[in-house]
Amino acid sequence: MTDTLTLDLDRFLGAWDLHRTIADRLTSSDSRFTGTASFETRDCGLLYAETGILHMVGQTPFKAERRYLWRQEDDRIVVDFEDGRPFHSFAPGDPTAMHWCDPDTYKVVYDFTNWPAWQSTWRVSGPRKAYTMVSTYARAAH
Picture 1 (spheres, rainbow, N blue to C red):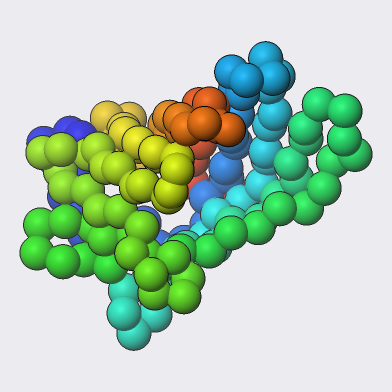
Picture 2: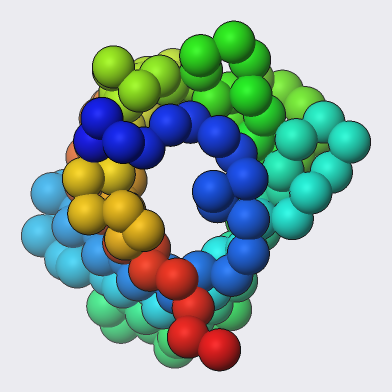
């Protein structure tokens, strides 16, 4: 994270273009997602909502969506699932986090060095999962 970027949630407000690649090491296949993400103010912080089209090898492209709650807690951003269950948190000095979902491990690294463009890289491993997912965000052109 750059020294000039603080973890003020307001910096994320608004619409973002979202591009994602998913490299599955078990099937040796790549998938891609193209869509939008938005951050909107909620009582608890921000609602993150993404929607777009997921292209997977051998399947008809389909609409995919997900939602999370982002909130500020001291010097950390805490990310929860939409229903309030904990997901992960990260801080400016350590933009990494982990989530364990039995039996799989999810590790993320956020990169804000090119703000306002940014990305998250998830490495997922487990007995039935082995993939890397890179999501790139850029301010939506209006």
